[in-house]
Amino acid sequence: MKYSRIFLMNSLNSSSIPSARPRKVVIGMSGGVDSSVAAWMLKEQGYEVVGLFMKNWEDDDNDEYCSSRQDWLDVVSVADLIGIDVEAVNFAAEYRERVFAEFLREYAAGRTPNPDVLCNAEIKFKAFLDHAMSLGADAIATGHYARVRHEGGKVQLLKAIDASKDQSYFLHRLTQQQLANVLFPLGEIPKTEVRKIAEKIGLHNARKKDSTGICFIGERPFREFLNRYLPRTPGLIKTPDGKTVGEHMGLAFFTLGQRKGIGLGGSQDGNGDAWYVARKDMANNILYVAQGHEHPWLLANKLEAIDASWIAGSTPISGNYSAKTRYRQTDSTCMLNTGEAPLNFSLNFPEAQWAVTPGQSAVLYDGDICLGGGIISA
Image 1: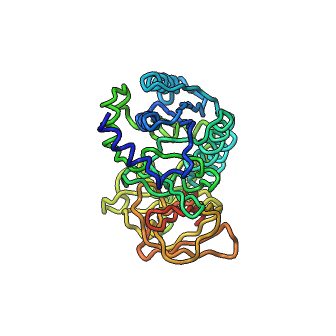
Image 2: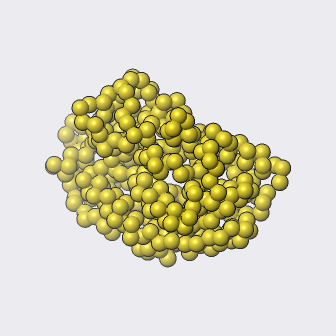
Image 3: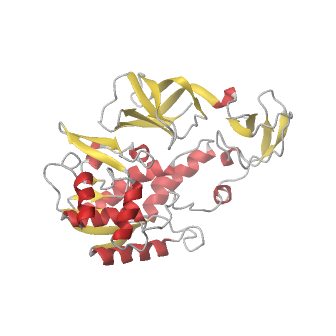
């Protein structure tokens, strides 16, 4: 197919893969359009491709929100169409131990973790990578929108060409060893073209809705899900001036910048501005809320981060970079300051950042190169 090979040449160019081209590639397939097209592209490029479907969650797997059965059927259908072998592997135990347990610990401590970041580092590029290598794979691949570049004996993680779909933020904790054996076929292709390719080759999931990313939550109400695992600890809701305006069900169920679900109807002072979660006082079990998107309590020019992970294997020198403090956020200019503790750093921003949230990731960039990042602590 002449149309598709143009994209194949662009997306799997020599700057994105090692000079010794891998022969057998095991690709993670979720049943979605992205991994399906990525698998087809690799097959067209001449690789020996094996699809691997990861089952990472078993609790309430048959309910309306998160059923892996249909995803597996979609994977089998795609594999049959493009002519590759596929198998399923169960990583539910590893997921619960390495990702979900940490997810609950962080929420219980009042922070807002990003399980997708941890899932990539611990499951998709560790447990999955190990399993793929046991199958004789030379490399693994996924449908992530990102790029890798091998240069000067190092592997760099780059943003995807499609800025609106770039997923380097979620991949920032990957190591040199993990990235050395990874292909991202979709890194240089816009998402609109991915769906066009899917339709052109007859994939039944060409218009399948993108997943929410957190498989164990799916489309279900988040608070309802979290309530199954964390106890309710009611407390007071107060304004910055100390006025009590309501009662909350537990600080774990709220995150900074949250607007919906606070339970405050109408304006307290008549100005009509919406309420936002502004702070959480864990010691006294108080939820502070403020009115107005630009309230000073929601803005910060500095953050502290811990548990840093740097893709190059060493800490970047202090200086000017750009950073994201949440996914889909526009890059913001910042100054990196590294302290005496090797895994801690701080970022200073000339422009105030909105709702900087402990538990989320602060990810650092040098142009298109993702350098790594850490967990926001304050």
